[in-house]
Length: 174
Picture 1: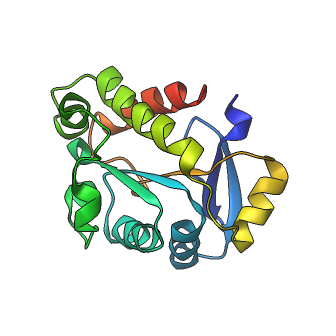
Picture 2: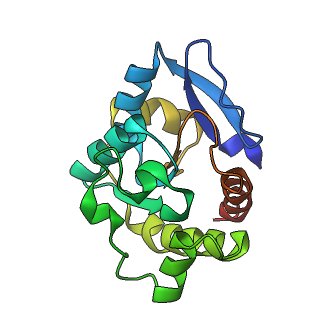
C-alpha cells in the first residue's frame, strides 16, 4: 500500500519516487533537511551529499538509528561529515548482511534483505519522543513508526534507484 509512504518535499518540489505520496511540509531545502533530521526513528541513507550528511549527524546525535548503504557511495560511505559510528556494522547484522550493503556485486535482493533485517530488528524498539512534525504525521498514520530514507535530489549510481525500489517493496510488509 503506497499510501502509507510519505515523501517529504519542500515547496515547489516533487520527489520523483514511484512509491508513496509527496507531502510538502516546509519552505525550502534547508528547512526540509533540518526537519528531516528530527522526525525519524530509523534513517536509511543512499548516496547523498552534504545535506544527507547533516541529516545523518542530527539524527545520530539525538539517538535515532542511522543505517548507510555504502555500496551507493558519497555520504553513505562517510563523506560530508557522516557520523563515523553510523558507518560501523550494526552488532545484530551478520557479516554477510553487512557486506551486501557495502559491496556492489551483491544482488539488490540481498542488499534489500539486509536493510529489512535491520529495520525489523529495530522497529519494535524505536519509540521516540514526539516531535512537532511527528504529531502531524501520526495523525495521518496512527501508530506507524517513521523510517526515513535519505539520499540526494536524484540518483547518481546506476543501480541505486533499483535497489531503493526493491527495498521499498520489501519494507511495505514490515
